[in-house]
Length: 419
Image 1 (cartoon, one colour):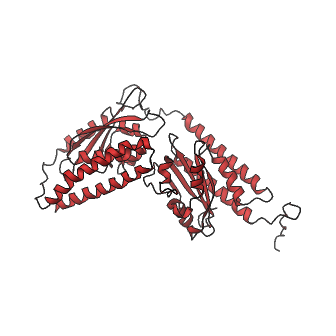
Image 2: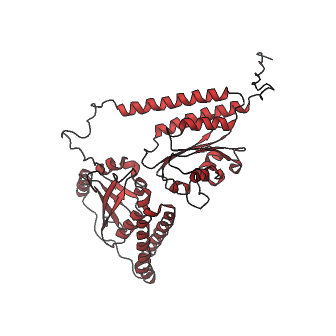
Image 3: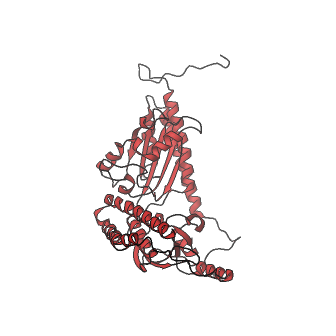
């Protein structure tokens, strides 16, 4: 029975990898070659492994071997794993992180607790994800170790890393694991921080020796400036005679475009309970985006974007770094996933509403692409505040009296207290 379960898990993994390889059609032509090689590996795996194993499925399952290791020896091995001066990650057959040493956390700029249980491919450039998955799966099938080049998100080749994969079977576990080590491919590659030995000079500062983070102070000031500029813009727009929802969203998007996000997309909803009533009002793309690409996003039906529909219907905000679901923002007219076509590395999608429980007036979606730094939690908080300010402006516009015949805004009638 264990053999059948293992075969079923392997077949499920194979189908998942093939589905991911299918999205490679949306990649630029020069990035498809590695995906083609991975597809050939998967086809060879079907012919050489899956089909023969299916015919031999009735054979007896291999009994797990090895006794329980000495706890002191296990503790020593864990300490050695953490102290290794190169990034090392222990993966399962589906490329999900089981354990990550200190050097690897520095390389991928994450915490070990956060990375555990998540696919390692989320930390890599999109064009190499399917390839790494296939190679890890091959090593987990005991087909031998191998080496390949992957890339961290970033411009040029500075993020190129040589990853070496080796299979191992942890004691007492029925499935193989894969040990992955990472090395820079050249002088311009990413610098890797080595773990600090207590008492050694340099490295991580000891508690109590913390210095002010000037970069964080600068980023905080920039976020405050953005909120101030948005408030000034919205107040001026509301005071402008004849302003409508499109004017508010156009001016708000102009504040965010380029400065805070590469793509700024705004949708308004006639009925929050029915996302299909939403319509796209604003779509601003990066300077290098062609008119056809911007037009395809502008003409996209918001109801076909799961993130937008969820934000409007349920008032749910989303912060995603290296989005795993390629269809989270729908597809363009040619059928290509928008997130892949635009090389989106992180996104924010927030509902436009004054406060929880209030009606949702629409959704604001922000993309960062290419080598630009991903959205942080602090920036997600800024986007949430800005969405409330925009919703206040939209609500104020909808309650303004119509312009008078001379084009001037009619003042609202003052209401005396108690009247």
